Image 1 (cartoon, rainbow, N blue to C red):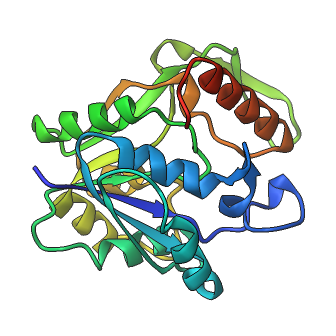
Image 2: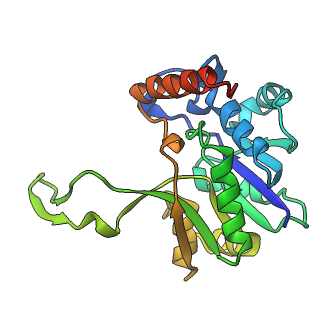
Length: 234
């Protein structure tokens, strides 16, 4: 199989507060985007990474990623106004011989390369779509618009889904072709579900957490420090 990774990185990430786009915020002295691209590039299965950057930052992002280590080729294209549009833009520039597509959030900068390979291998084994996920450990309650609890949700079958998410290329292409731009999905697996595709969940990684709030940056710094103390430079 030939595997490509797509990284939609054109969003602002308002919950992190004012400043640079979220993908360009730094942790461990480097932007989240650099860490995310390095994770894909370090994976055994990935040969190409396509980043969808903010339209005005394509040249600077291309320069930023020029020195990312790994065997994968890295390309940068202009993203769109939504995550969904950015993935579609990156999907359009893939070479014809790509069989498996991984979509990975720049906001999950510390996903281990082993997780990347596990997702790609599960798609290669025959799944339409594969997502890593972790069991929910908190009690989950459904509430109404006034905040009143309607019911406690059984968490036994719930999973908190992560990225990278993997797809057979033609399945992801069909899902995006059928997508409603006014009804934006929060992830690409959701688009596959809408066209009747089967999505397989495999075990995720605690280190593939999403950087959304300032406290998440602190956690990311701690994970990087632990890795470096163990001799892992990324």
